[in-house]
Length: 389
Image 1 (cartoon, rainbow, N blue to C red):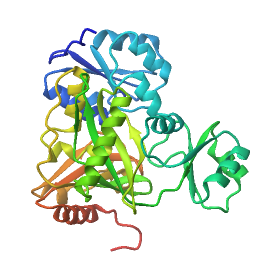
Image 2 (cartoon, helix red, strand yellow):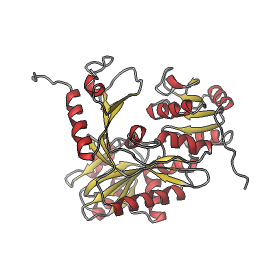
Image 3 (cartoon, helix red, strand yellow):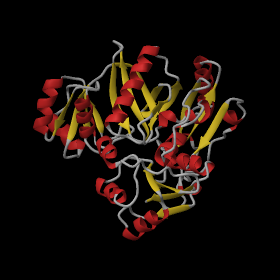
Image 4 (cartoon, helix red, strand yellow):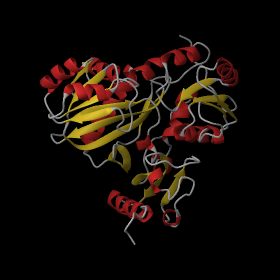
């Protein structure tokens, strides 16, 4: 088979989606001398579109908009996975799409993702696919409680899922799921959640950042600690499992695999994200290269860069809850005056509670120091609630 041509600077990267992951990918592409075209169904001036040479704003099935986008780009990638398969197939029939449709369709659906993990022999939570209230009751009896019911399609940041502890009515639970199919997973008692962010190139070469450790608040990533506080053996196993998953998907680009580390020291795959990932944002400041440059290199057919981490780091998400008013930003002085903290804002015009508006990263000589200083800065930004001085 003839190797795919390398796309050198000067060519045009197409990005489906206008959010912050697209913005940070576009920034790396522009820094390297590429043109960028963004296709988004958001209003003009999306976070990614602000940095693009061309922003196409239309529904994803708008024929005229799709044709305009295809004419402009040489290769297409995406910043989120919840895109219809028919749309991905249409783009693949005109231009290279990386990662490809198979990887996206596998990872955007929990049922297909779990079946894929089972097929390739990667450890995962025991599960059952359910299609009705009666099916839920039967699966529930088999798996026991607690367990977690998730929609098969399109879930993230804890959306589309419910923990079941044993006292719920299966009929009511199924009705509230409001989906034709679900996945019931056995509850995993874990010591830590870790993730591996890695990239796989067109030629199959693989480069992983050191595993990182994630802490959540209300199902949304709050803090990433990098590198993770785990043994070298566990880190090597998590990286090897990530490489196995990427190879089985014939993946091209950056991806993340989230793991539960159980109290017994066993790794269990929780989720695959076929794109750059929130838990990899620290790589911008703490590593020799970052996850977005790796995405660009892989998609363009270039060799991957060095993923080594040069400084311990802690990344903290900044959610819209911090904003005093939807269009009034917090006072960033505590972060800006810290000599080893880096502030990243995503260019979103209006803050909404729970919405990811930015992040900051603290570098230090040790993880303990980075975590202490990051928590201090986080507390300094905490909004004052009623009754507080």
